[in-house]
Length: 598
Ligand SMILES: *[C@@H]1O[C@H](CO)[C@@H](O)[C@H](O)[C@H]1NC(C)=O
Ligand SMILES: *[C@@H]1O[C@H](CO)[C@@H](O)[C@H](O)[C@H]1NC(C)=O
Ligand SMILES: *[C@@H]1O[C@H](CO)[C@@H](O)[C@H](O)[C@H]1NC(C)=O
Ligand SMILES: *[C@@H]1O[C@H](CO)[C@@H](O)[C@H](O)[C@H]1NC(C)=O
Image 1 (cartoon, helix red, strand yellow):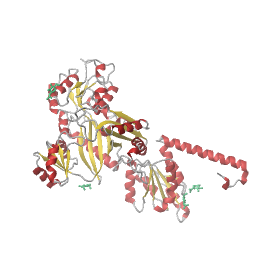
Image 2 (cartoon, rainbow, N blue to C red):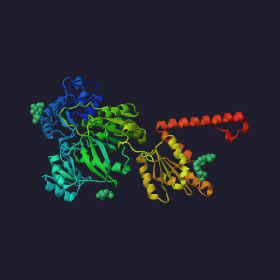
Image 3 (cartoon, rainbow, N blue to C red):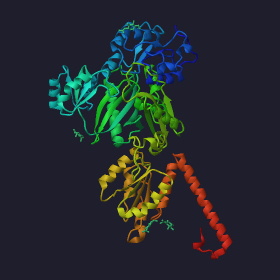
Image 4 (cartoon, protein in one colour):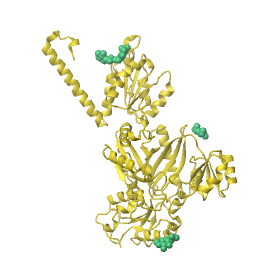
C-alpha cells in the first residue's frame, strides 16, 4: 500500500528503465513535484539514483540494481511502480509486452495494475531503424531512399549499390546510437569489412551529400493524443568537447521550422495511440531547403536540454505530465535565444572540460548541469567520450548567446568549429540596414557607426524595391525568423524601399530619406513620411542616419535591458554636453566662437 504524501499531485509511482543523464533530469523534475520515481539501472551509483532518495519519501520503495534487458529485473521494477517509462531505447521490449499483460489490472505499487508509456508497440518500432524508416516512408514523410538487406552479403550490398549508388550507408537496425552502427561504404571492396563491423541485421541507405544543417523537433504527446511541440532547433556540428544546440532554428526561416514541426507531429502520431511522452525527431536540411526525416527517439532528447532554463515547461516535466495524464505545460520559449553545449569527456579531455565548466560558472546566462557519471571499469566508452554534462546559455539575442558561448569555450578553442568567425555583417543580426543602391552607403554609415558604438549586432545589404523586388520580398519574409528585430531602410528619389519593406514585414521599419542630385531629398522625405494608413514607417530627417541608428537601439531597449541602459547613459551624457556648452557661452559671452568648443 502506498505511503501517502500530504498534498501530492500524484500518488502513482513512476518506474524508469535506465538511470543515465535523462533519468537524472527526469528525477529532478519529479522531485520538484514530489512524484515518487524509482530507477532500474545496473549501477547503484547511476546518475539518476544519485539524486533521488526515494526511500525517504516512501520507506517501502528503493531503486533496482539490475539490467533493463533482463526480464526478472524489469519485473522487480514493475512491482514497485505503477507507470513504467524509459530513458533509453534499448530495453527488453518483449519483457514489457508480457508484463503489461500480466499486470493489466493487478500488481504494481498501488496494486491496481501498471501502464507503460511509451507503449511497447511504439518502442518496438523506434528500436529498429528499418521499421522506423518504413513507417516514416509509408506515412509520406520524406526520408533518404533505403533498401532492406535481409541476408547481408557482399553480393546483396553490391545489388543495393546499383540502385542507391556509392558512397552507400550501411546501417545496423538495432543498438545503433551515438554514431555507432553506421558504416560509410565508399568502395564495394570494403563491403566485407562493413559487414564485419556492423555484424547483425542491417539495411542500406542512400548517402545524402548536400546536408547543410541538422534540425531536431522535440514534442510531447499525451494519452488523449494532444501534442505540444518545442519547435525546431539546430543541432550544430560537433566541436572538440561536444556539440552545440541552438534554439530557435534560424536556418531556412519560418517555412522550414513549420514544416519540420508538422512532419515531426505526423511522425509521432504514426507510432499509434501508445506514443505517449516526449519524442525527438531528427531531420537533415538539404541545400535546397528540403527536409529528410532521419531518426525518431522515444525519450527526452539532448536537443531539448535547453528547455529546463529556456522554456515555460521543461521536456522532463512534460514527459512526466504526459505519462501521468496531468495537464501538459506550455512549451513556449521564455527567452529570445538559447543554446546548449553538450559536454563530452575522454580521460584526455577531462581537464579541458573542467575549465570550460569553470568559465561557464562565471558567465552570465549560463547554467551548468553535471551528471555525476562514474568510470565503469571494463566498459568501453565511445571514442568521442562520455556525455558528462551540459551547459545551457540563455540571452536576449542570438548574438549575446554567441558571445557567452564564445567566452565559455575561450580562445584556447579558437580553432573549434563551434566558434564562428567574425564576418563583415554579423551572422546573427538584430538590426538590418538596407539601402536601395550602393550610392546610399554614405547616408547609412552614421547609423552603422551608432549600432557599432552600442555593440548591436547588425548587417548591411543592398536591396532595391524597384530593381530587385523578388530579393526584397524574400528578405522581408525571412528577416524576423532570422532574429532581426528592426529594419533601417535608406532610399532616395521616389524612395519606395522603406514602405515596400513595411508592407512585406511586420518588424518596425525606420526610413532614412536620402538627398539626391535634385530636390535636396525633400522628394524622398515626402515619399517615406506619407505612408498609407496601416503601413507605418518611422521617418527620420533627410540624411539623418544617426537618428535612425539611435531609434533602432531605443526599440531594442524595450525588450533588451542593456540597450535601454546604454541609451539612458547616452541621453544623460548628451544633456551634460549641452549644459556645459551653455555654461561656456555664459562665461565667454556671445563672442564665443564655434572653434573654441571642445
Ligand atoms: C537476470 O537477472 C537475474 C537476477 O537479477 C539473474 O539471476 C539472471 O541470471 C539474469 N538473466 C540473464 C539472462 O542475465
Ligand atoms: C532538392 O534536392 C534534391 C537533391 O538534389 C532533389 O532530389 C529534390 O527534388 C530537390 N527538391 C526541391 C524541392 O528542389
Ligand atoms: C549625408 O550624410 C553623410 C554623413 O553625415 C555625408 O557624408 C553625406 O555627404 C551626406 N549626403 C548629403 C547628400 O548631404
Ligand atoms: C540632421 O538634421 C539636422 C536638423 O535638420 C541637421 O542640422 C543636421 O545637419 C542633420 N545631420 C546629418 C548628418 O545630416
